[in-house]
Length: 119
Image (cartoon, rainbow, N blue to C red; front, side):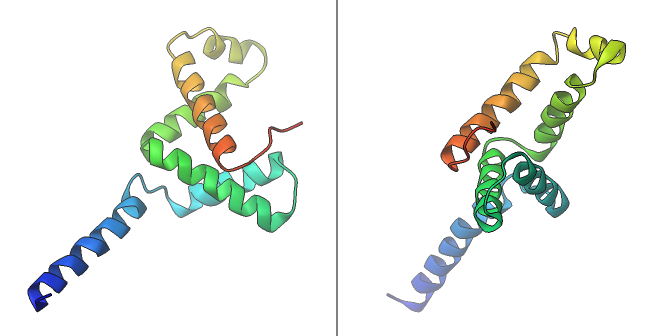
């Protein structure tokens, strides 16, 4: 190959490798919080669960933008508010599709990363 062809090939390969890393990149703090929550919900060997939970968030990040993830996870957390304050949220039909989508994404990520459902 000629030198320009090698340079072009190198540039294309670098772009291809870095593109998934840039797609829907979540802030580091959000990744850490998600992995810690996942590990707390799924007890097991620390190193194994850290890798599985990181895998799960990577799967979710490959499917949705960070802003959508924040919206969905916030709705799911808000729906767990008990009492009268939570009724208004639980009765809001507009929030249910977001919660459903989030739970589906989590289930798919858990399955693909071999995380057993919590007991």
